[in-house]
Image 1 (cartoon, one colour):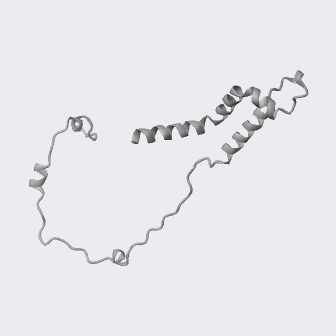
Image 2 (tube, helix red, strand yellow):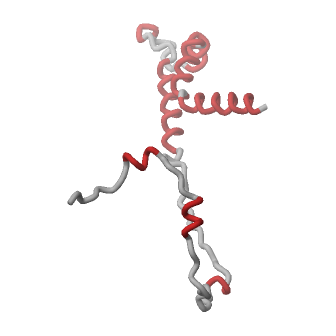
Image 3 (cartoon, helix red, strand yellow):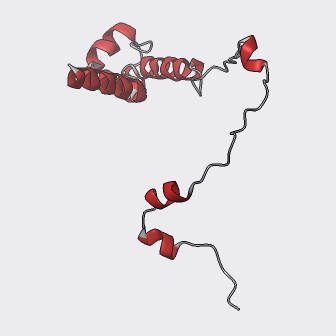
Length: 126
């Protein structure tokens, strides 16, 4: 299911990207029919138009439809965050009664990394 959806979306993106090329391919495949139905210069065979005026009109339509699409595709959206009133109230700071010792905790969480021996701040050598 996911693979089918991926193929479908990829095909749609490629069709949108190559829309002008698809118009030209359609013209080449159906040149005789387009010449019979849409050619303006049927009575002037020396021009060898063969429906190129219809092709130019279709290409202009494809180009104009591409230019109508927004370039970025993103609209500017402003999000306002409303905080509850109790989040804005600042209470008294709570300090621990006695200073805590971090010595044992720091020793337990220590680990060696070879990157620390390479990347370290410069030190003065006296």
